Amino acid sequence: MSNLIRNAIQTPDGTILESLSRHDYKEYTDANGKTYLVDGGLAYVRRSAHGDEVDLCLHDDEPHAVQRHIVKWGSYGINGDQPLKYKSVADMDTAHIEAVLAECFPSPVIKECMQHELVLRGVE
Image (cartoon, rainbow, N blue to C red; front, top):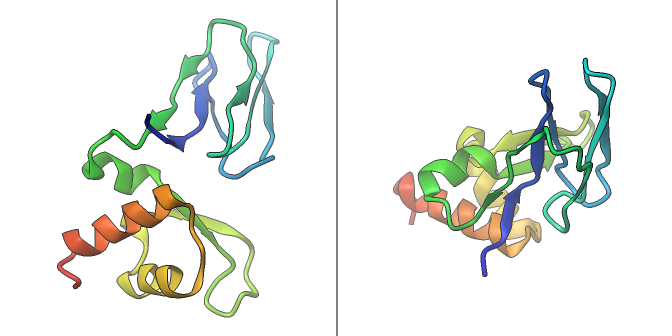
């Protein structure tokens, strides 16, 4: 069974709604007047079901070349005093990935993606 690495939809006017963490509820009223929503991060999928949205969810059976741009990690900066910002694993510095793996507890899916990224970068 595959694990979710992206929980997102695209509305008819092209707006992308992505839920990045559990209970990260996103809502948008499209140009067509309908309200669309997505929620659940990587923990669960909850969304509107009008039938005209595009499912952009991805799972960990995607190759690492795709996952590294999709899997994201949220950070408050090196000193923890910055606004929360999400970066894809591909955009993270090697030192940051190593620090997350040593000091944090990422989900198994995120951890595996980060480990594969270090291998890709030639880090032992």
